[in-house]
Image 1 (spheres, rainbow, N blue to C red):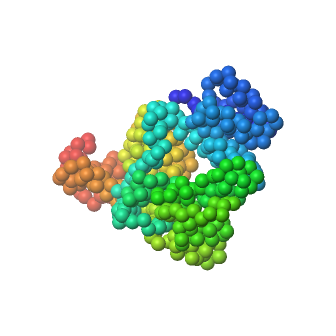
Image 2: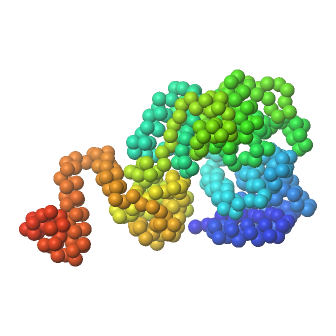
Image 3: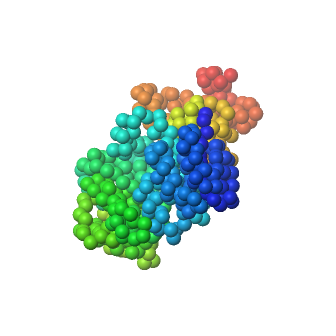
Length: 470
């Protein structure tokens, strides 16, 4: 399995040291440079390119923007993550215009940098593995990610998507972090009359407030220092399609007013512009916050809330759809095996029961991360409870009340697979488990085990023989 290869370029020795150490701990190979010119010299020597580049903007010699332009000219699909300060608006906007993959604010959170770098490397590998025609086709239309779930809570989500399939009404998606709100938004778009038009996503929590207006509405050339060309904002990009505004509760008050105007009359002005631009955009918003409470606290406009909250969909947490947990984990294990070039893991019955009882506070995202961890770290092909990461093993469980969900899941799957005569099979399984547990409890003392089960000793002996438990 090949490790991802990353370049880190910064004239600050301490930043190079921190990032190199963290990236290596994340199983990445790292080369550091104290100037962009050193990195560009390797490019000119036709050295093997990295999977991703992390670069500061302001450095002696060639700056980060010059590096960005020259790297993109030679390796157009190379993801470049630009580091800069919140206040450096001009440089940041210019970086996005030149094709930067990601913006990293200084001072940065190391875990966030690792996560974004891994995401960049994964996309770069995916592009390398596909022919150029397929890459072009994929860029024209977002791939559809399938929603998975048989639980009643997910069935309600599916029904809502179905009812809205012919509509362009605004939708609000509520749910905890990691519940798949963006996947629901993608499904709403895919199953709508706008499915052949753009789906554009923007996370309000991931963009500095002083960049958000330009991101949403774009800007005109010369609107501010560094605006060397006209920038098309997300509203124009999603014209005739769907704009997904994630974490809408983090939108600042000034932008809430502008958004309300766009929702009211469908037009807006670019930053520095004087000509109104008309768009036809369906808005799907999402948040993990309680917007009603934010409205009460005067942190969110009440009129905007009512504009967005036309139809509400609840993204259920995993603890409300426990019967889906083994199915989801199996899906992620198979996916991780392909991505990491490993053998797909399977789950023992005890493992399936245990993970179905865990709380999973990080929801689907946490489950997916656990699948990657298990694919790499678990030594046996069949997973046992002891294979789980220690922090997952220590999660709260609900085993006492969860056996019904597991049993229901088994019955649903059996019927789905075309099995018949379920009752004798289930009864046999039920009796076998109870007998085994009782015998373990009494250290194979049959008289005592029979008493615990409410049978006579002869009945227990007969059942042991019938079920071939000797």
